[in-house]
Length: 209
Image 1: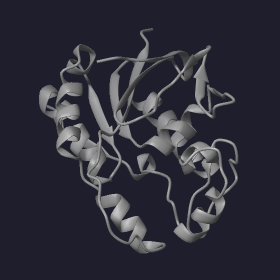
Image 2: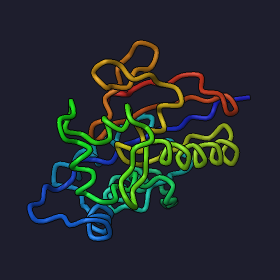
Image 3: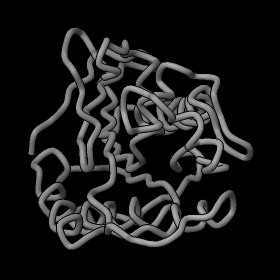
């Protein structure tokens, strides 16, 4: 039996915007529609040229614009359509005022990092680390069954990827994910290669492209 390979990808760099981000629904709509920056488009094109991403069997992306824009280059080079699953979406932030209170005096400025430590925390209408891990894991288990021995590109988001990786990684004192003593960098974009035999993870490595 051959292994199943999942290339887990965080979307590329997004446009920086000024303006007021209100709470709940407005912030969610803005989050879903964020687009790639000019640099992000070039990052995505370069990423798609990586040798291992030129022999993909299937592509899955979140429904967010920036994820689909990152996926389109890989899809084009492999002559594939992009499959969409909302389980790959970024964890829902919910009420931004509550999130701001949560982040007061925290070690980092990244809520997704802090939620690695407080896995139950969520705002009104938001998702916790544990909530997000459950849906990401459900998606992973399904595609491992449906695409045995295939090479699968999965494009998602920083928080959701971090929370999924808690299935196999530890969190160090700097609130970074660690797999077998190697610190993972989940910045935009990143490329992780997960090798499975059946449903068992054999190896996880960060690829440089």
